[in-house]
Structures are given as C-alpha cells and as structure tokens.
Amino acid sequence: MADGFVKEPAVVTRKNFNPAGMSAEEIERLKLEDGVRLHESVKVEVETYARETGNPIVKPFLLVIARDITHAKQLVQLIQSDGFFEGRYQTKVIQVDSSKTGAAEEPPLDFHRSPTDKSNMAKYLFGDFNRCLYPVQKFQSDSERKLAVILDREAEKWFRPAKGQFQLFYCWNSDHLEYQPDFVTETTDCIYMLEPKARNEMNDADVQAKKDAAVQWCRHATHHAVSHDGKPWKYLLIPHDAIAENMTLPGLAGRFLIG
Image (cartoon, rainbow, N blue to C red; front, side, top):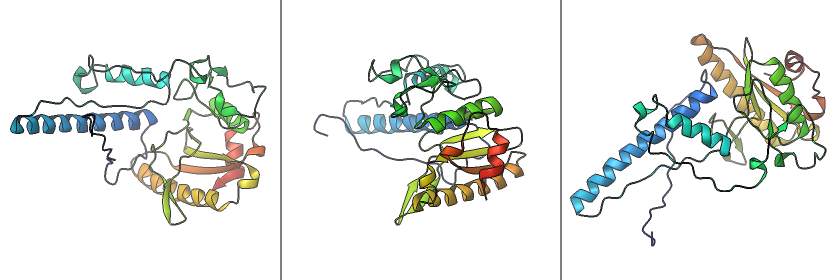
C-alpha cells in the first residue's frame, strides 16, 4: 500500500460450474469474459467512490497471464476481435513480455523426433502438430512426447490442460489439492483424460487419490454431457514404459481404462 497500489488478490469462481461438453477455447474465452466483467464492475465502484469522497479517479487494469508468448498473441487477437465485447477493447490491450530470451523464444522442435538429451525434457518447446489445440507444447518426459504422437495421429483434437481448467480436486493429507491431468483428447465417440506415469509410481497414494478423483469427475461429466447429446468422458492411467509411438489410442484404452 505504501507505493499507492492496492495488491490484495482475490479468487473468483462460478458457483457449481461444470465445464463438461465445453472445448478448451470456450472455457478460456469464458474465463476471460468473466474477468473483464469483474474488471468493469470494479471500475464503476472505484470511480463512484472517488467522486463521492473527492479523491482522484483511479483507473484499474486487468492483468492476464499467458502460458508463453504464442499464447499471449492468441489472447490479444481474441480481445481485439469484433466479437469480444463488441470490439470495445480493440485499442485497450497491450502485450507485455517478461523476457525475450530462453527456451520459449527458440524455434520449436518437431515433436515427432526425440531430442538427444532427454534428461530435462521440460526445457524444450515442441511444435509441428496437426490436431493439437495449441501451436506449441512442452512435455515432462519422452513418454509424454510419444503419447502426443499417438494423439496427433488418431484423435480429432487434443491438448494439455492449463492449471484451473477443469476444477478437479483430490483429497491428500486432509487438504483438497488441484489435479491437472496431463492430456485431454477427443475422438469420434468419447473424450479421454490421459495420465502417463512412471511405472514405479503407479501405486503411490497420491497417484491413486488423483485417479479416484478423475474417475469420479469423468462420471459426473459423462452424466451431464450425455444428457445434452455430448460424449462420455473416460480416464486412462498409463505406465510410461508401455507407451510406444506405433500404438493406437483404442489399444491404450483397452489396456489402461480406469472405471
């Protein structure tokens, strides 16, 4: 407060929100629109307070954090489009990049090819996808990259969820923690959540707790989706060393479907 800025964060969510049946783009747009509506409400309240108390009018701003520069450019294009709040924010958005260096700035690698150094897969940015909802992705292991090869070949579309995208929580040591599945993919007849996991971690208590929460989430999502002519949701927990690029998605589902 000493520098004249208010830095009190607040978390705002929709009550009983169910994202089943919504695409990643639709969920992202909904979140952005909700943020703008809250911003406009705060702007009116701040200006009203300033006029009633004789204080200078402060103009609040909305900060949107993107995954990377490519994602930031996509958000700017959306906000500047005619269909976003009737174009009211076309001249009121700027992109501020935190850095011009690092892996996010390097040309993405072709995800069909395994990098020579696999000891730190997270440092690489991969691209050349055909059916991913985003132009670039990162993987935590080469097994994840191999799974992406399968999904990009066989699914209608796929993506790696961002934090908070599914509002999926599991109980661990009396706490309710967020679970972010590694992959979500849509086929002609269903939607899969997929979690590749090191074989020696498959029976760990936290992995099992996440699995139980995901299976329950998929069960509820399926009930909602099917009642609205949508597709059922299914959960796969896959040992990392069982993934090979020449495998099929139905083959993986036949072996590792949970629930």
